[in-house]
Amino acid sequence: VCDPVGHTCVDPAGLAVQTAGLDFGDVACGATPALPISVGNFGMATVAMRAYPTSGDLTVTPATAMVSPGQVIELEVRPALDRRPGPIDASIVVASAQQLIEVPVSLVSTGALVLADRTVVDFGDQTVGQRGDEVLVLRNDGNRDIEVVATIPSGPFQLAAAGSILIAPGAEEVVGVAFAPTTAEEAAGQLGLDYVGVLCARAPTAVALQGVGDASGVLLDQTTLTFEGAG
Image (cartoon, rainbow, N blue to C red; front, side, top):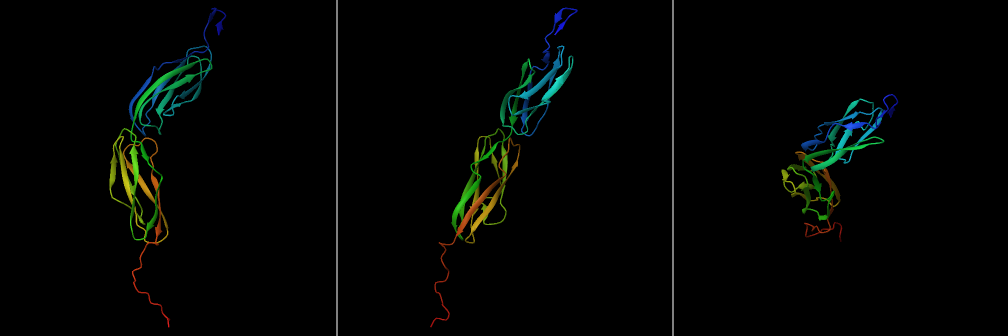
């Protein structure tokens, strides 16, 4: 855009970011503190601006704005609520039709990331009156300890041991489950998982339990059978 009086030209693409970078430091998963990015229009024309993160671990608002000449707006950057643990190095991109500016963002997301080795514990056929045992393996891929409390409602399924377990970062622990059918039929239940501590991303809260009571191997208690009416 040129000034016909002063015979000077100014680039109409005048967006400038006044924030060199953002460092959140350590941020517990579930926490979403905000830091600002200041964006100003130092050109001579209104600019359609859009902003977006280079990683799903970050959010930015507003995503779009019309910035008038001389106007300065603030973008709000937050860690995403559902994010992975560990160091996160990404950028917020501020763009217009003529410009693309990247603002580096860093943080260390802290919390546990719990993974289960399966979604269903299947005992198969189990003799009525006898007990079968299985284990569910839980792994913590995060960077904080997590306490896991397992529960099972009443029924043919039981916890092998009561109480909670503590899983350190990078470690595995097992939850023992027992199945002791009293009838010859299919059984279904649920293992509930509750957590005490900071979680990153979604952790399994329930695991299905199933098994079949088998009476084919059950011995009769009576050793003599009497048939009434026999001549």
